[in-house]
Amino acid sequence: MKGEGRRDGHAVVAGAGIGGLLAARALSETYGRVTVLERDALPQGGAPRRGVPQSHHSHGMLSRGFDVLEELFPGLGEDLVAGGALVCDAQADVRWFNDGHELLRAPSGLPCLLVSRPALERYLRSRVAALPGVEIHDRCEVLEPVAADGGTRITGVRLLRVNSEPETVPADLFVDSTGRGNRGATWLGALGYEPPQEERVDSELVYVSREYRRRPGAEDADAYVVGASADAPRGGVALSGEGDRWLVTLFGMNGDNPPLDPEGYHRFAERLPVPDLHRLLSRLEPLTEPRLMRIPVSIRRRYDRLERLPQGYLVFGDAICQFNPTYGQGMTVAACEAIALRDCLAQGSGDQAVRRFLQQATEAADVPWDMSVGADLRFPFVKGRRTLRVKLLNRYVSRLHRAAAEDTEVGRAFLWVANLKSPPQRLFAPRVLARVLRRRPVATTVTAVTAVTAATAPIAPAGPVPTEAQPERPATA
Image 1 (cartoon, rainbow, N blue to C red):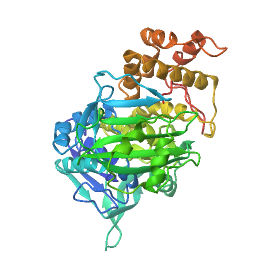
Image 2 (image 1 turned 45 degrees about the vertical axis):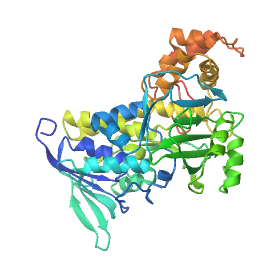
Image 3 (image 1 turned 45 degrees about the horizontal axis):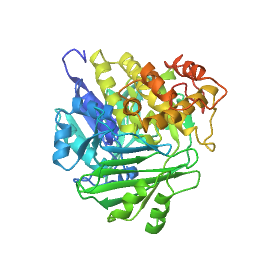
Image 4 (image 1 turned 90 degrees about the horizontal axis):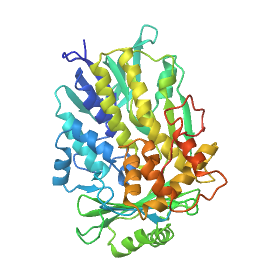
């Protein structure tokens, strides 16, 4: 049996992005053969590709995600640094601005990886391709999974290679890791199954990114992160990257979008909640023209609530949950899913393993989804139900950001939660709570005790959340 030392069976993964590669890494410990199918032509170098339009833009790898990647691919950090990537301390080496307040810098014990999306994907692809029994095929489009026994059991995958006729490849497990543009609902419908319930949040987000020349040692930080505020729904990041570059992404919401002309781009940076990122850009030499990316709606698909799924059908990564990318959570959640998939398969294969994985993938997404959705609801143009609890939590987090400008312990607590290394309850630990609340009197008719009680009571996952219903966990900005 799989998971008891014998590797057998054939798993097919649709999609060779970060999620698909991480899924293949997990599957390789249980399945004798793992085939990854990618519609794009995969570049030999670290270049962006058509199927990942967001690869031109800044990507964040949270500290928790970096830890998991090192576990799955020992030596990853050292190898990427040798290629020009950076590893920095999330608090000491990054300038964070939340609600217009700069987080006080100090060592945090949170190593973060600064690397471009194409370089990371190229590295993971080379490591996965070197695994025994794993093959990666590009220019190969998955048309649909194939099932037998009245659609109850996956037996293969119908695919189309370039300049060829459609063919069917036998498979014991099919993994949908096709990302934001996935066709899971269509595929399940064709097999006679209901699509998953969806939760949607539209922050009306638009990215515009540009690369600049970086002179190592010329600046006092390896990254700048400027969060949007309720009064100024604009923000941006500048991340050091390989090739002595700054990867700069500015974002706007609700129609207030960064312009594509260079002068307009810099004027937009001047309108951010703080002037520091604009001052940085004013000192730098641009290397590329601005590039536009309209961010799709954030969607969470509740596969964990489906009563029926075909045996041998599994969903992974952005096909389960696609986040607002300004919070940098997607790749880290995919990494956590890879660990969950590996561990679930180690306990045995079949429907029970899939069900275990879907439940654990749900738990991996719970906190980051609730944090990002709660933060999005600060903006009045974002549709959603704003419960008293959400309002109190956002108010508390706003005060926490003010305190973090003067108190390194408060800032460290925020970053450990934001990097998914600590649960949200850490923001309400007695020492942190006292340091936050002593800064200013609570400017609300609701007492501080009420706010804390609402925030800390049932923080564990709640029951079913209908579409656009909102979180019951502390939100971060």
